[in-house]
Image 1 (spheres, one colour):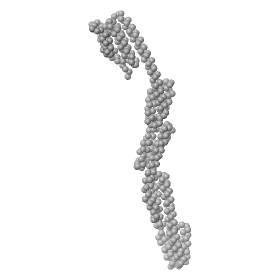
Image 2 (cartoon, one colour):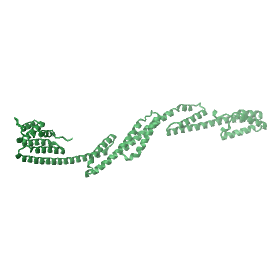
Image 3 (tube, one colour):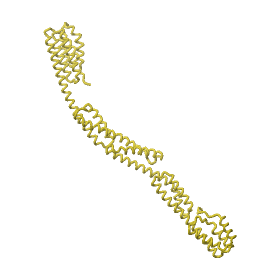
Image 4 (cartoon, one colour):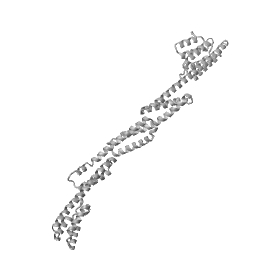
Length: 429
């Protein structure tokens, strides 16, 4: 607020002058009121000086000198004042004092009062003109300074490289634009204000992008591998959603934010990969004991096949990563196929052993008394469904060779034995 020129002296004087002006015939003191006013002013006691001046102006012989000296005191206090309303009020009060003095001075002094009024008006006009010129100079300087500050802010906004400088430059540029708003119509401000406003809009887009990016980075930091799968899934899902939105807006933001997004995506990928690897390892560790059993030499083919079948089902039902699951399924399926083939081959070799033994025994004696026990002991337990084509052919030829010399009833007996005997299951191997 502008300084109020300490017009207490003026106001105090008006009150005093109103009461003292009607006692123009008061008795003189040892010292005149004018002299006392001068002494108070010399001691910088303006309030007391104002009262003595008021008293002096009420006495005709001293009225004119008192008015002049009091006017000089008030005008001196106005030297630092820049508020035009305060200056006008002060001069208006001084004019009223001069006009009031006309009621008690000698007629010959009226012309002096008139001259004093003219002088006051001239000095007031001169002071107002000076103040107006000074204000114009101040405005010009202010505009130049503001224009320079706006140019500097705009230049600084072009070199942002982190979130702190983004917020600082945004606030600074916003403030400078607001300060310069009153000069919107000024030619020198038109272009730069337009550029500054566009830059401010771009910075606002960067700020919104940056805030989302920071949220994503916070989510990533909360995704340690030791979190529960449910928590990790929720956090990673949220991060993926934000990253998808950021990728859509990537081309609308500054290059440093684009680079920051790329780094964040890499960090997210690395964290996810570590989580996946830890989760995969935990699941794979649960298969170790059964894999050790598979490696045992004495394990049966069927047990091995059953273990592999169960492992394949468990892998398919697990939360293994895609690549790890495919790799594991490939190994287990290959092992399962090999085990099935080995079991089939072993069964065929077992059957072939019995077929060979039956053939040898048939060669020695093919009569019914010898042939029927051979069928019962060597061929009846073989399940031909599990034999390959070559072994099946061999089986058929030996069977026919053994029944060649048997009569009808004896062949029926052999058929009954073959049909009623429990077959050796492939699962027994």
